[in-house]
Image (tube, rainbow, N blue to C red; front, side):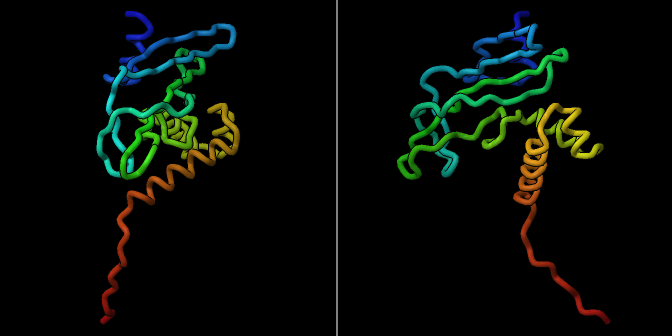
Length: 160
């Protein structure tokens, strides 16, 4: 099995996406995975959910991913943009990591689990991140939790 097939499987990449290239730099202990998509794909507007022909690409995003054999691993992707007739040009939601983050979903999940067990300083050392990056990951997790929480007014019964 070659490295493209290997990373396609472990990252769970599905068509129309594919691993285009894998570069391993042993001196830097770093692996870079370049993900691309088939030509002529249709993409969903993040506002209304309708599919349209891909308009163009946003600049390349690089996401920190879980280590591979103790080597830092990064996923490179150029997110497609859609030109919705109603909402205009929009970047689609990334399947690799949350927009606004430079961590893959899997890496950010690991950072959050470490932070549940350690201080922020310990999390920065174990994950190889800055204090700001750890706090940003925790803040995104809290915001996701709040967004998924039902908003309702509590009903209070009368005391008897």
